[in-house]
Amino acid sequence: MGGKPSTEKDEIIEPMSKEERFLDILKDIFIGAKVEGESGYINLMSIKSRYFEHGVFPRLIEDINNALKPFPDFREELFDRLYTFFRRYFSESGSIYFRYTPLHERVYEQVYTDDRDVMLFWKTHMLYYVKTDRLFQSMDVEVNGFRFYFDVSTLEHKRANEKRSLVYEFKERRKDGVLVFSVAYSERGRKTKLTDIRKAIKGVLGLQRYTDVVPSEEMLERAFRLFERQSEVDYFINKDARAFLREQFDLWMYQYVFREETSWSGARIRQLQVLKDIAYKIIDFIAQFEDELVSIWNKPKFILDSHYVITLDRIAEQKGGMDLLEKLLDHLGMDAQLKEWRELGMVGEDFAPVNIWQEDEIGGQLDPRYQHLPLDTKYFPDLQLAILSLFDHLDQHLDGWLIQSENYQALKTLLPKLRKRVQAIYIDPPFNLDKDADFQYSVNYKDATWVTLLENRISIAKEYLTATGSFFTRCDYNGNMYVRILLDALIGKQYFKNEIILNRFQKK
Image (cartoon, rainbow, N blue to C red; front, side, top):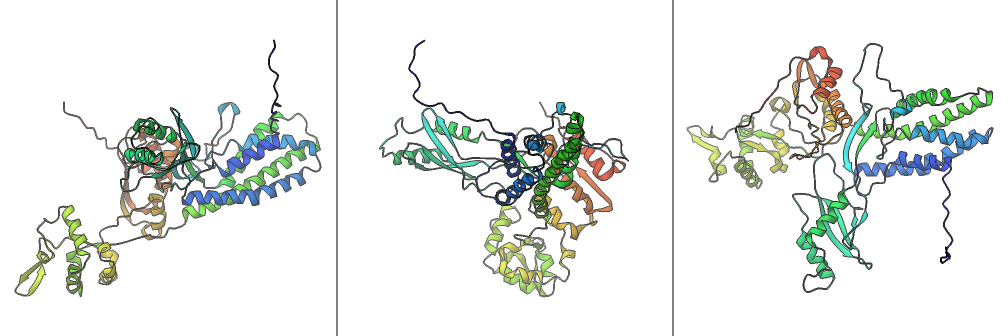
C-alpha cells in the first residue's frame, strides 16, 4: 500500500554488551538509587559515589584487563557471571543482603548450626537497620493540562522514623508555563497553604481575579498526591559485608558454575580462578566502604544538649543551696519555669516565686507544699554549673535519666556507663501494624526489617541487665511470634517466665 516514505533515519539502539550491562549494574548497586536533598546519610552516599567513580572503577577495569590477557575470549562470560551473582544482593538503597534470591535459582542459605537444630532466620539478620525513608526525586507532574515541577534538591531528610508530612511552597512559573514548587518536611506544625499558593500563582499571572488558568485546590492536592507516590526504601548497613558476600559467592560458585561444567581443562580452571579473583576484588572494594559505615554507625555519639531536672528540696539541702535558690527565684529564666509548672498543673495561675518560702522562727524555709517542684536547668544556663557543683556525687542524687535520641545510638553510647547495672527494661516497639494508624512514628515495616530493628537494639540492651534483671516487651498479635523467637535467640528461652495477655472489652 502506498504511503509517504519516512525522511528521517530510524534510530537503531544497539543492545548492551554483557560487560556494559555488568558495569552499569555495578554502579547502580554500589551507589544505590540517586537521592536528592540534604542529610548526613546522603552525604555519605555522595562520598561513596566518588569512591566508586575515582577509586574502584579505574582500578577494577585495570585488574580485569590484566587478568584476561591469557584468555580474552572469556571476557563476555566473566562479566555475565559477575552480573548474575552481584545483582542478587544489592537493594535500590545500596544495602547488601538477600535482596533477590528466588527459589527457582536454588540459592542455598545457611540456617543451621552445629549446636542448634534450627535458628531464627530472616533475610536482613546480618544488617544494622538505619531507617526507612522515601526516595523522593525531583519530578514533573501533569494534571488536567497543568504542568507542575517539584524540586527536592534542598529537601532535608528525616533523621529518624518519625512521621512528618510534606509542605509545598510555590516558587515560580517558568517560561514554558510549568509551575515550580519547593518541597520540605513539616516543622512545628507547618502546613501547605493552598489559598496562599493559588494567590501567588494568580499574582505571577497578573490576574485581578481567579480564572481557569489558576489550578484549583483540588487540582493542587491531586498533583501533590501524584508526586508523593514515590518508592519507600529501607536503609541498612551490612555488619560484615566481606564475610557475607564471600560466603555467598563460594556457595554460588559451587551451585551455578561447577554444576554446569562439562570440561575441566587446565585453561578452564584458570578462567574460573580469574572469575573468583575478580569477584573477591569487587567484594573487597565494597567491604572497605561498608566497614567504614559500620564504624561510623557504632561510634559513640556526642551529646548535643543536656540539662538536669532537680527538685527544690535537693538543692536546698546542699551546702550553699539556699543562697543559690534565692538567685534562681530572681533569675529571668524563672518566668519560663513558672509557665512550665502551670502547664503541668503543679501550681495555680496565682502562684508566685515568693510562695516557695515559708517564714518560721528560724527564718525562711521551703514550704512543704512546693519543696518537690522540679527545677529544669535549661531555663538557667548561666547557673547550671553552680547548681551541679552543689553535689559531690551527682549520679547518686539522680532518680533516672530521660534521653531523647535515636535509640540504637543512645544504647551504644551509654553502654560503658550502665553495663550490668539495670534491673529492669521495658520496651514498647512499633507494632508493625501494616498501616499508618494514629502514631507519631512509622509502624508500617516489612517483617524482616522490623525484626532487624528489634535485634539490633535488644542485643545491646540485654548487656545493661544485672544478673537478676528482667526484660519486658509489649507487643500485639502482629509481631508476638517474632518477638518471642527473637528473645529466645538473644536472651535464651530458658529465661522465659510468663506472657501477660491484656484484653480490652468495649461497652455497647
